[in-house]
Image (cartoon, rainbow, N blue to C red; front, side, top):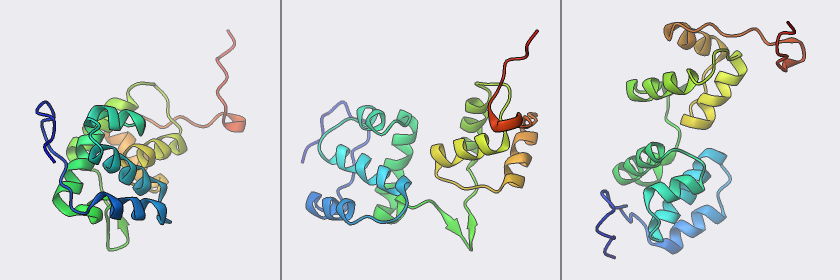
Length: 155
């Protein structure tokens, strides 16, 4: 299975495609892991990291992260990392990425930031942890407006 020469990092075929298909078919764990498996399947089938990532609505960088974890550890590498019951912490690189993505808007409620971290990195943080992360970025969580939706200030 020769990869196209323009693809900088080949995907390791730890298991044959039919096995991967079975895992996907019978997957009953987190949606996040399923997305990663679907991403790997696209890579098996010759999609570039960029196009496979786009199909899964994640950044190309996230695609490379997933592939790197898959190449290193196979299926286990796709699981969100839980250590001793605590969610894995973001690596400093991911923190940087998170900081950039949070700076796209000025105000985040805790729950929005929590969801962003969960969907982007597959890591669940408690509200307190999110509050601390925002503070460490010099950001202050927005108080949710009544009913959680934002009204533009009427002036």
